[in-house]
Amino acid sequence: MARIMAFANRKGGSGKTTTTVNVSAALAHFGNRVCIIDTDSQAHASLSLGIKKQDSGGLYAILMESKDPKEVMVETYLPNLKLIPASRNLIEYERRYSADKTHRTILAERINHIIGEFDFIVFDTSPALSLLTLSALIASREIYIPMQAHFLAMEGLAEMVRLVYTINKLYNPNLKLKGIIPTFFSERTRLSRAIIEEIKKNLGEAIILRPIRTNISLAEAPSYGKTIFQYNKRSNGAVDYYYLAKEIEKLK
Image (tube, rainbow, N blue to C red; front, top):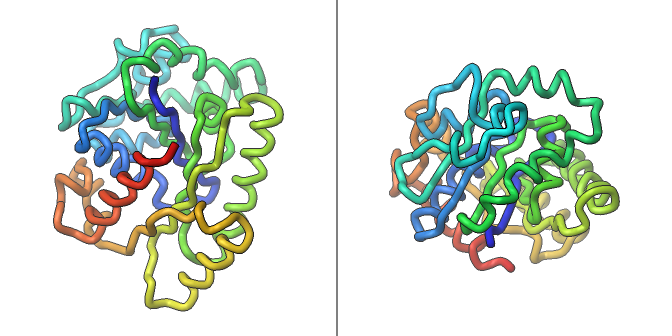
């Protein structure tokens, strides 16, 4: 049965989509069967895999037209890495149903029958506490929080931790915060080291996963519709995401 996980952070610019795409790609390179579900109407995860932004279909068709997830999956550069893409009309779905609490569990229900076909199902979420972000967390069993290593990001981290507790209480007691991933990290700066120590003090040392160093190739790869492993497999970004994915793969 698949491990179902979400990469989420309410604060934008955290490297969340970059982390979703490259961890998923690394897991697929290791031989796992992986499905990314893009829940953000901006479709950045889809674009980062070379899939053009669509006006309709994809996740919207699963939610609104009861399409089988297998009908809307698209292929990527790896045969064992699938994508359920986002589309522009997810904005309409959010607008229409954001106040309807019954829609928060629909995503979990609709993907239930593909769980046995993958080793990992991975949600990319929007940088907002939207209906689809809540739906992805309710459907998940693991949450990973990428965050920039600066103090303004600590407030966003605290909000995400509180959100996990709320979802545990109201919808999904099985959702666990499995890791915090420092991004845009520089070990030489005092600030980056101080942030790591602050998180360890509050949440424990084991919660910190491999940091992702600042790397220009990570910023360039999405504009070519490529993962870091396609774009520059010898870069620091590729090395960091390889070892981060290995770490996540070993977690139970």
